[in-house]
Amino acid sequence: MALIDAPDREAGSAAAAPAPGLGELFVAFAKMSLAGFGGVLVWARRAIVEQKRWMTAEEFNETFALCHFLPGPNIVNLSVVFGSRFRGIPGAIAAFAGLLGPPLLIVTLLAVLYAHYGELETLRRVLAGVSYAAIGLLFAVAFKMLLPLLQARDPVAIGLLTAVFVAVGVLRLPMPWVLAIAVPCSIGVTYLRRRAA
Image (cartoon, rainbow, N blue to C red; front, side, top):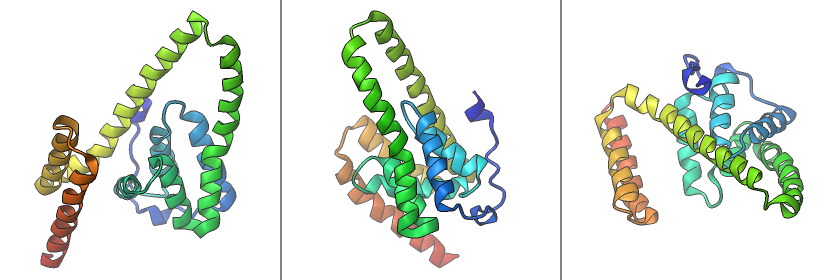
């Protein structure tokens, strides 16, 4: 799959790429949202890290992790945080509008069509196929986001990741409680490491 095989091209810092303007933010997030039926994260990472090089893979992972703590959909939070990072409040609005504007129009049109033709068996099969493709893309981007952590071979970070995965994914503990423990541990470990360095 092209998304997995493409190199990250993250040798330089994100500062090496010029900061995007308001129009560029709108267009970039509009393209991501239009390409991302079933999930925009794959296309957002590809555009921001690999194509535009506005962020490194590590910066993207950290920003996306921050977006998990904010209320609302993670990718919407990412558009606001990313836009505000480069252009302040106008940048956040431009990225947000680009992300949500075009799909809102398309979904409204599709809702009207589905109300008339939703009972067709062929349409149901197509929608099932699209959902499987979206799941595959989600696994692909999760793997790509995990690679920098595995390549760093940091046993503490991998241990924290594994503990959170087991707590939430296997033991089904409530995420707020798990994060209430994991976040202070992660911050504490990072602080102690930087102090020692």
